[in-house]
Length: 274
Image 1: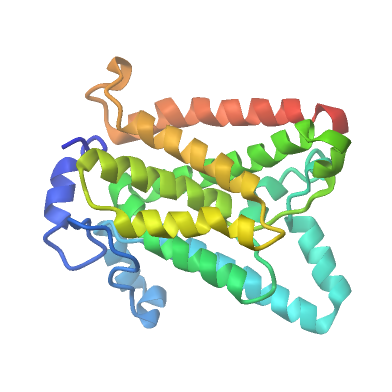
Image 2: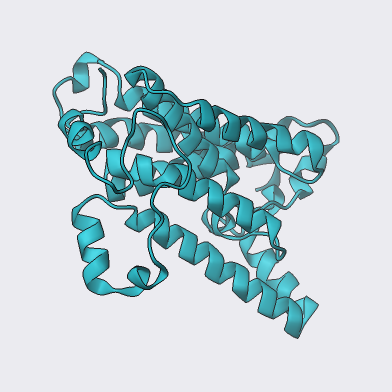
């Protein structure tokens, strides 16, 4: 059985627990926490020490809070909502002037119910598993790298799409990062020989959505999936340079070059609008 380095024993022990757990079959939404435990410091500390989904929960709370702000802004003034979104959404043409949107766009969603509901359910389905395998900060690194991979795909599309209309497309949502987590779960569980049927069904639904619903940035899905998959493959590989190294060392050795590639490729894409 091939696991993330230093997680094989963790995997065996965690299967015996009735928490997030890695099981013989992937299950959606395993053992969701009580709402009050999310704001209890002692409960959060216990979750942190036990490898619980603390970062996953934090990301969900940030996205929900930002979504609530959007709802209030829309109620108060459509102009206020537009100003908020224009400062947070990713629009390739203005990325040189608003570079923070490469990150902030991952935490914004359409001020309706279905976009954020679907994405947050998806995050809760896959996030706890990867967070327990990688550890809290390494999981956050994978999440952000995957999201930046989705951003890069949008920039590449803007650079190469005929007519230049891709530069003016504004996008937001966690989908790029989520598809990176999809890829990580797929790589890890397949290498361990675990049944991931429900995971594949959930992934197929997400991949098919842009063909059914217009206005979904499928490019971010593809970019996030590729970066997350490559990162997971590298972390679980037997490359001599990192053989026997800790998971932290592996994450840095592979994560930093991936980030450099993403930034360099993104900068090249932005040359026409700089």
